Length: 321
Image (tube, rainbow, N blue to C red; front, side):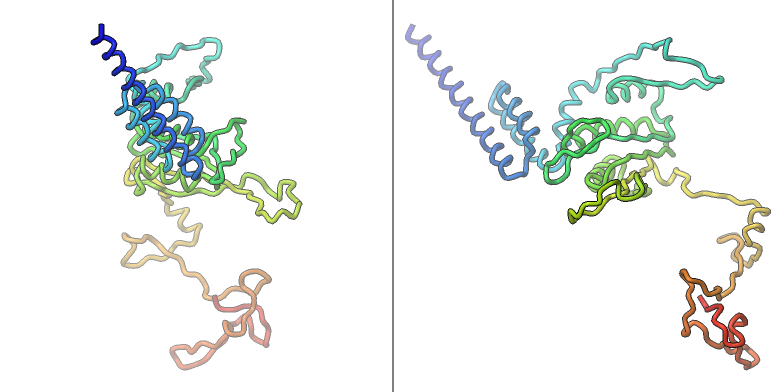
């Protein structure tokens, strides 16, 4: 009897110690929340995991995830996704929504994009030439939730955590010469570019396209010391930039002549044909306004000096470029 009592007491002491240690781990995370280095939403997730941990070692491992949460939150999402990485949800065709339009078959998939991307890997791995994504934009650096088209609230850490495994699946779907575009606002494009650099490689970055989302001040006429942003961004990456044909435009002889590229020299194989353009421009109210210092005489090979023909008789009609 005494042995059983002692065993129960020791078990209670171990549980009490384990609970105290868990409490200490949670309190250390709370300090990071107060310091602003860990977002409350991530703290709540870590807290629940620590409280449900079977042993102290697991709790300590979960606590260490807070270090990665402060940066991007990537590792936590990876661990969650790995648990279901082997699962693939097969799709059921909806004949009411499906149709054949002129022999071209389109596919509309409705569902969680992570599961659907995994499903597409079965038939479309290394086959997709162009991918465009428009994720819900995250919160800014002050922790305020940004307005999104999806009317949801998502923090920056959660945005990056959500996108990381999905971008890796998208990369597996892309053909060797494939490209991916991603719309993002100016609050998050710098953070998202770092994630794209990690997944696709910085060497495969093509461009950060700036697009005008609205014209005019958008109704913001108050003096609130702020700048009205009319633009957002589209990150543009290749799977393998060496295999991606960007800006490769080939003109035939007829088109070259129309454009004025008629001249050739011994470097034609390296740089193609070229055209000659005048060294002067007519004066205008725009870029090429008349400037006295750019209206000068030039000495010809025979020693004669001459000036711009359009400025003879003292007129100011042109200048050198």
